[in-house]
Length: 139
Image (cartoon, rainbow, N blue to C red; front, side, top):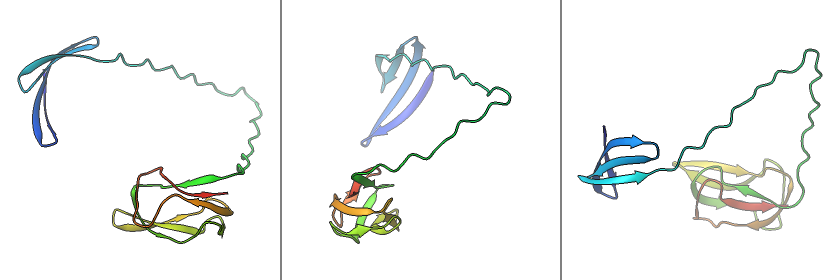
């Protein structure tokens, strides 16, 4: 029997897990009993490790060519856009600063990942962004 105390949106919940059998758990939340059905855990596929044959020649690997066409520059972390230092139509070089993002009270320069032309700016100064949000499209 395990007991937990959760606070959700200011409301305190005392949860007691009485038993778990297969995919059914018997619990009490603030003294009210419930039966909870759970999904069966997915079985993990076994990992088969192979070792190369003696005297095997390793495969030749080549870097993939950079895809042409538009590519969105994404926010590496959540924060607030405090400055945009480019405009649509600007030619940019790889590593050139395009946006300044404030995250955790620190300014972070967001640089171009490749040479190209700014096709679209998807954010405005003052916008809040999440990690992975598109910021600028470079073609």
